[in-house]
Amino acid sequence: MKLDSTDTLINLVNNLAAVAPTMLAKREPLFDPTLLSHWLGKNLAFELLSALNEVRIELVPKYAEDRLLVNAFWDELICQTVADHQLYFDGSKATFDLIKAFGNRWKTPLSKFEVIYSLDYLRIGESPITILGVEFFTPSDADITERAIPKSAVDRWRKHVNTLTLAVVKVDASSSNTAFETGKEQLVDALVLLKASALCGLAGTLLPEEFVQWKLSGHYIVNPISVETPTHRVWGIQDQFGPIVRNLSSEIEKGIDTLGINLLCDIPKDVRERVTRALNWVAHSATHDTDDYRLVDLCTALEILLLPEGRRTVNKGTVIALRYNLIGGDLNPSAVKWMYDRRNDVIHGDPLPVVRQQDTWDLRLVCYPTIRKLVYASVKRPDLIRLEDLMASVETKERLEKFLGLVDMGIYEGSLLHQLVKEAEKKLKKITC
Image 1: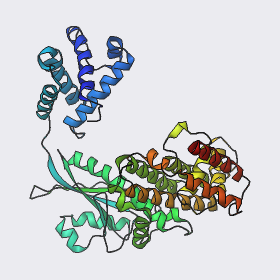
Image 2: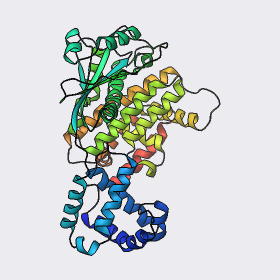
Image 3: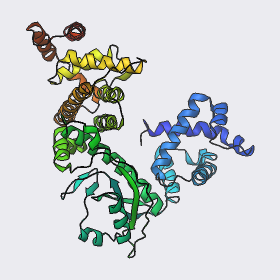
């Protein structure tokens, strides 16, 4: 449960229970946001809907998203429990036991499926790569036979691309359709991490974006594991011009190691989610045609990593550049500040291109070590469960004094350096006072 306490849900449901009989008598829908706002007030209605949705997600898995089923679930639950709340809501444990038992009657039985997707333009060689439970591999004849992939499908796929790369994921679902959707969601997340790893491994290579224009081809097969004769579904595809295709197995492995991808499962949830989100933006930067937009995506990734406090931060570019230095970044922090300021030029409507390809390269080389250092720092400090706390642990008296000392020695230079010095002195004063 994401709720602060069971009492929170009980209080919210009891508030609804007070008006439920009247709403039912008038044949008004119990969960219409407008009516709930009228009966309970806007804030309480919002809290109630959010709380009940959390319970529904826990009791009725996300594959059961049919609107009629969801509405019937809650209408019947309210009629049976909330409307007669004095009988049921005499204690939080009894309440949740009742709701859980009710929800279990609505759950759709699950089966195990293996879903195979075909990918365009991705080559990984003979060694499979597994990320987030998704296995990427180039199928051999034995794989094709073992996984019951129809020869007609293989022929069609190979006609479209010279080298066939597949991704396979095992899921629990209620049907072939929901297995496809659930597996696709996992695959997209894994593909983002794979793309970010490849970009990192290709650092310094000319036109790295052209190597990672991978996408789902549209072909997929769902194999019910518990059924002897699998059901095969193959979708069509349109031929088109494609990007550079090359075996990137060594670059991907290098990127996985550099970024610490395999350590993501070992760090606290908040840190992991923020790092993964930043990786998403890094990977997305390769989808643009111009360096202006690529730089905006990369700056967004740095904001997620180095400004976990979000909108509360003023002088964002200055703080990002300073924190990059404090976590051990090698690039001149004044240059990092300069590149972030180019982001402001782009999004605030500069009519001319303001970013060069070299800027995009350099900013990626800021993102990669930032991700790596935060992941490894989080592994060492699992007690700091929020990225904001982890970042606060970086702004120490010793590190700030070291930065100011390097500035005095002339190690760093640049027209924007005075802004970083001012920010560091302010933080140092706050610590020492």
